[in-house]
Image (cartoon, rainbow, N blue to C red; front, side, top):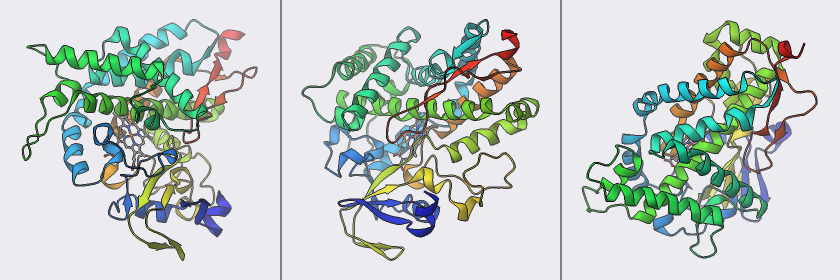
Length: 389
Ligand code: HEM
């Protein structure tokens, strides 16, 4: 990647598909929605095809529709609502820590970190605690299936026929929550109820049940896998180095820095797609209208010309590093960024309080996710050395 950034920052990687490797071009493309459209889809497999409107989620829209929809979602999903979830996240983390604390070895992913973003999302969406595990299992099953088929989960949901079982069960389940709220005189104050009550002031449009199903599904996919990856990368980095772990444990002002540095060096979304709306020229390369661009988020975040020669290294000693692009930039900037940060900071602080010493399990190396766009670990086996003596 280093060579690509310095020698060939804009390269053709397939027929009608280009890769932006450096920070400058990626950072400029994100806010320029008139040239770099989201409407052709955000995943490599979507191939810029037109997506049926009832299945279109925020990330697959351009302004002006996007601007209106985003305003609606931000009224519900914002820093204030996320802060209100902090107590719930702290409590869930403490409960999970209580369960792993007596053990000598654990897989930190399956026994703790996977549960945090799933629980937090379900809490915000009003999904009952008893169903949270099941809901997240459907997501995991679908991600693996999509990856096996070389498609994105958006492709799986882009059809009515032959939906795989976990997709049918998930959509049926979301529908049951919608029906419950439609029939209730006193529905809970959550995102599904807000979508049911929404009416566009200008054209009177409301959300159909199908649209609500697809938005909820997207929020979950957008927020669960990505935050899971962030937590896995952050913990892997700190637990890999005793010095780093103890440094952050003893100086908690470093917790938020560690979260940002993890997002930068191991960006959970490695890449995201755009479709160009006109012929353009970038770094002397001509790209025709309709071609697709892979914005290389991970590569941009490691750009030497922005973060210095040690840009690939995780370091808590960078002085005022420029903002990373892990959450994107501009009109589509992630609306869950504050939630992801709150979760990561809470979980790390609680974990550091509970465990003075911890290391990776030498007998069982952590396994990386095999999903092409995802940067994270599937498993993270650790041991508590003090107890093994
Ligand atoms: C570490 C965790 C996360 C990462 C790395 C991440 C990354 C991103 C990125 C890169 C985008 C921009 C997409 C684009 O420009 O096309 C995005 C958009 C989005 N994210 Fe996140 N995300 C995370 C967590 C979350 C969470 C927790 C939620 C839900 C509460 C969420 C919901 C969304 C939504 C709805 C959008 C679309 C916004 C729009 O198109 O206007 N994300 N995210």
